[in-house]
Image 1 (cartoon, rainbow, N blue to C red):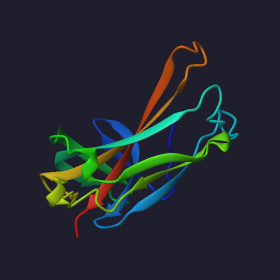
Image 2 (cartoon, helix red, strand yellow):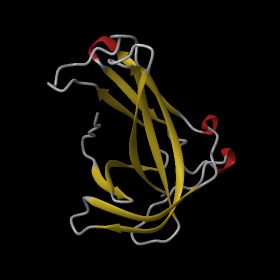
Image 3 (cartoon, rainbow, N blue to C red):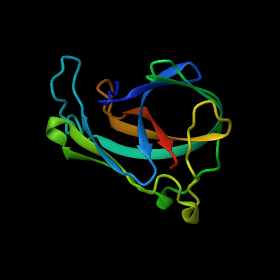
Length: 166
């Protein structure tokens, strides 16, 4: 399963490329999600049993940040995870809008960054600046295994959000 976001840049973390979106402090986004099969047809998230969606966020300090010449790729180095920020302190929601057609959404609230009263760090990512902070959102999809109905297949799709503090 791969997740493609419109208007995204590419971010490289520890040699792994992922897509990312820039979110400015105070902004919120609802991102549409469409699940499809290998042929591009809408996936029925009710079959064989209902799929489950969850989302979480982790915050990291970054020792170095480098943008390429065309500003389409960000290379991050030396990430250190910050202490867990309780999920009750910021808003991330995900749900199916129509499970039968595989359509869902992921909502990132405007309190995902710079909410020190709730323990959410000032999330900043500046070019070539040490000690930047990155918020990495992960969408988790679990569904019944097609090989064994008593097992669950779990996919975690990391979404990189470059959040700039203004």
